[in-house]
Length: 479
Image 1 (spheres, rainbow, N blue to C red):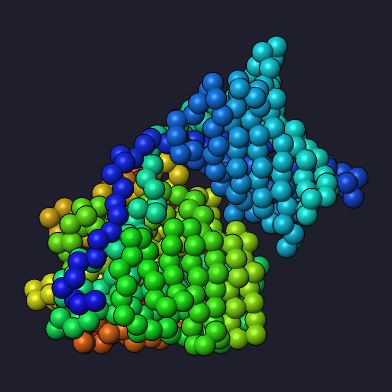
Image 2: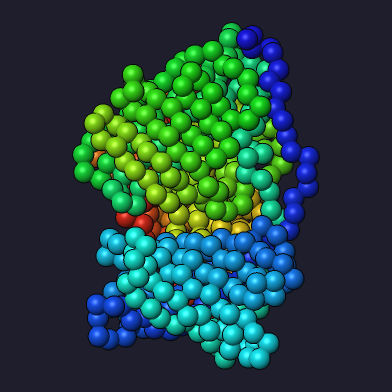
């Protein structure tokens, strides 16, 4: 295929629909079968449905959040499903999975809705706790009307819902001097390993044949980083995703091999959030900037296998995300962070110095998006990079092994500190469409500290604080 041939990709013409997001807190107790005492329990959930709630029908919804069991568990990565059917089936069922002391547990129960006692039936949740299908405890959770009703009602949001698969379609239309990337980063909660899958289309600036290539890497908790490349091979146009010999990216699935089967993977991907545009949405639709990055889903979970040499990782509901890049090549200098903060919160940062004349002398432009259930801050993605006519821009100090981003928007300010230990960092060479080279230093087991503060009655107060140890995904690139 020649560099001037246009790749036609199917796009979705359907308009986004409105979904429903709300938060719920319940308090109660748990009695384990092998104990003679009762433990206090708190369950904080963010519930997300892809449509308006159907009071006369049944609505399936995803739930993420945190469960705390006194003296036993504090699981910030609880997740599961809700079946909301108050009239059709007269129940609201909860199935929430979490980890306690290395054990994978499932809370299963439902509120039985009745007309005789509508308030109690809508606020009391009897449940059973299971491990590998065996009952290990029972309990009851209650929605405290006095303290939680107003926050519950105020938490309702009705965001636009889009199909993440739409954003897997190739953007390249045959122009020389372009690069397009599909990449995925994952944390295996069982082994602590980080995974990186990078798939790239390069259309050289001299008009020669476009090619597909990439690599896979695993960052074990104990042991050296292992990586292998695949390609380059002739680029084959796809309706959606990426394909290079035995390597493929498809909606809901990633598979492939590298270095003669030394690394191989077969993973299913389940989006757990809506698309997140790190750069302005218009920059993805109209490639006017040197490059743009976005996430088809801000969070996703992965199941399947990843084998490196003689070790096979078996992933179950492993957190991560896939992202997309399209542009003219790599920046002069850049930093990137993807951090799943738990409870449905996620932070994405791209800070970069452009290669274009006039822009290369500027300090790094910061694009920062903090997604919390029901809202994304700052409200406009241009705000961290541009500020108000240049004043009030977010600032990045890009060094290694520690780099930082700070900034303020509205009544909030943030400080992010990312640490990429040398023994958990992989250096790789990038080749741009014009033949120039850059080096990235990537860690899929980075550390991150995030402090979010809010101005309140004359002073800054902590609104949220997160510390990630070995579960952040980060990169610094230089020339």
